[in-house]
Image (cartoon, rainbow, N blue to C red; front, side):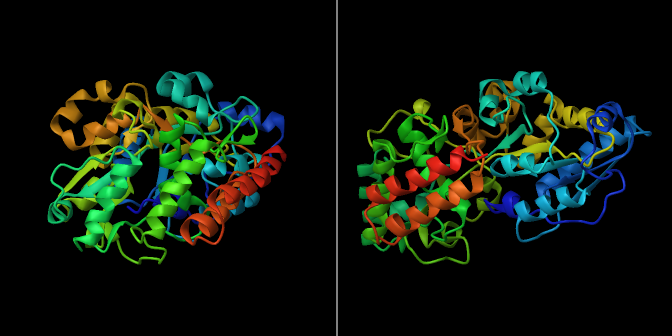
Length: 422
């Protein structure tokens, strides 16, 4: 699974028999909310998630012959936002998608494509973190499902080749010093290689994790205003600018996996990657750095979450609601964790699944980090806001064509205007 696989993977599959046309009136919606019968769901095409999805559906169907779930992998495609938006307009979206990007929720909600979910169940399952997923009207149109809290992976062999046997990467100064040793020793061509391309979501894997850590858990937008032009945001931007200016990171696009290939000594990524790196990289992992070197138990990071949403074309929403709760029960969350290594977005993951983490200690650090994650803000024009930020970041931080502080100030003014629009 690639980091952005869930975001890019959804495409429009034809009309789905279990889901009728959208745009129903209030009466029809009330009827649908109680109706039970067959439904269709989509899940990710990641191999581990496919295996989990198949067993989940089989377990449900074995007990509900009159409410059969038909599931399919999400076919590969260009853009989930465009395709799901088209499905909402056409009225043929599935009842549930187990891979809904939080950044897209405000757009889909505006289209009338989503159904509000059971708030009490969501808050009981996820605890305080659920508040980040609430929409402006106070309702939940997404169930916080799974996260991949991003941290810094480092290649132990490359670090040893550079003369670093016990790396300290807590502060920006330490991170830069280690990066310079790696590059100067030619142990690797670059210290780290975040994607330098301009897609709106790329900032989730360079700026945003470090900003979450530096700011103590702030989102990009809060209370209708941009937060990133703060001192904390400018420190993060300047840190990354130094990485690029000193050729410790590259502004050129890389077509493979620079960390696996040994081109870069570090990567910003979540626990899904552990299975990918097995047998390929002798890795260690640490929290993302901060300017002052905060202790690990105070570090926040980006969640890289994918959630579950119910789509308004669904006729049998009573069944869909039941399936949603079945698929995110403690039992199924445990099976999902075991199958994928991704963190269920529920309270006390580390203690709830203590046996799993005892047997799989590589994942324990991520379970702790999962309790301190920051999501993309659930605000109108979310994707446009992220693209506005990325444009300024690319120009100033990656390519050095503008002062980083001035670029963030200018982007913040534009974002403030976008955040006010409904």
